[in-house]
Image 1 (tube, one colour):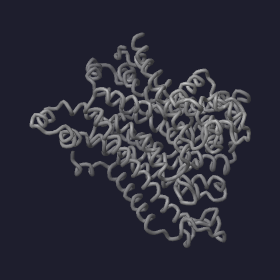
Image 2 (spheres, chains in turn cyan, orange; image 1 turned 90 degrees about the vertical axis):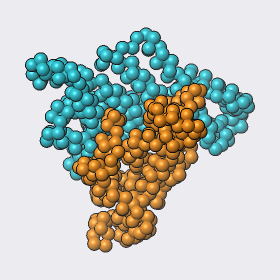
Image 3 (cartoon, one colour; image 1 turned 135 degrees about the horizontal axis):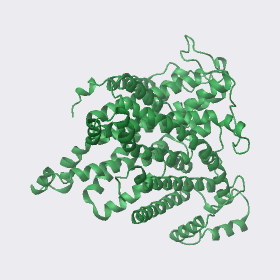
Image 4 (spheres, one colour; image 1 turned 180 degrees about the vertical axis):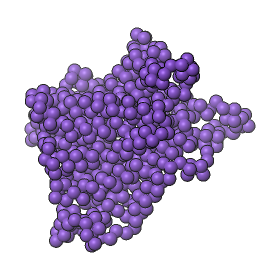
Length: 313
Length: 275
């Protein structure tokens, strides 16, 4: 187990290094002098010269990359041009908002999708199954930004039940915060439910075909006992992986959902910074989002044996 | 592989019909639109659907039906080129990696893994940040985002096919390596590529709409479904058709692709059910 863990962690290192190279190259591909870009459009030759030597722009590109990487490792992502604040601080703030949106959404989606998917598999090719599968594919096909827009139109404007614009942290004012989160969380959860139902259903069907299920039935166990004791546990493993993947990619910013509901999350921060040409923030967002994605994937891989004891590490 | 029995599946029929309608709309949109999709007419601002404008007009008095048809052409073209490019580059890279193995495979796979470490929309956003919004930019960004998945799938199939006797036989007969690859290995990897390409078409369409919705895709005034939705946000209360029309179009197209893709997958590649 320890050896596998170390091996798996070691594998993530080259991936992250290449990610760093890609982000570095991408940011250098922006036309213009990187030092000038970092400083903004200031007419300040002394600061510019200082910045150029800080970034090592007078040295070979490989050295520039090493200098840049050292800074990143030290947690120094530079300052935002537009807001003159450390990028890392802005990233943490935005990440908190994204997490309060994404974690409840994925939790609700999992709680809905796993039982529904399993029931559909259990009643395969009946009316129940067809209904669940159809609902799943319909939700899968609706873009989250459109569903969000329709929610705003119906519950915000027509029925005037929920606030349309803005965000209040549920940590500061729980009741008000929840009111702002209901629509975005529901929109995101419904679409993820579509993805997860299909996964839960197909992995349950696969398990139900196995011999030990036939054996359990032959032993005279009731269908419920077969379902709960034998099928459910084993069908969960691939679904957990899918939940982990959804969590990993959404924690890196549910960009469009955050845009529709004007939530100041990390995806919104990335898009706003792209429009503001605030490149230190763009770069910070890209690195941060990828790091989260790789770490969540790593965690999912390492947790796999907990859900499926047949996988020995 | 049997194409005929595919049409016995209800999801293939429904999905295929939906796709056919949407592709038809896209072709019409490229050739003909009832009004100029970018011509402003401030006298007919925000008019609801009427005999003159079947789907109403937007905040600049532009005909929504014309913009919808034109946008269908734009979205479908971008998605098609993205899929073609991603499949072409991904197949070459994945096949080469799987077939030649060795250091080439290790380097290629490490690079692809790193590319896959970016959520695809974030990767595309990063590219758009540098190169600015444009149609070719969207195609390039999405190709880079999806190509690694193709390469991984192709490499996997090549790895399993390359040990088969008929590949060995081709070598023994004195055929060159590239000939063996294109004549005997790749044709036997076609089924998973078709299944993946169908899924990619849907992802590309959704991603293009999302990018245009965010203002980083197809630049205005040319219409795109995502851009139309984005424009509708300020008028959604007084002119709800502006939000309904492009949204329903995107959803129906994606539904068509998903249904048809499921049917294809069940038909040709039951192993990929979990993708």
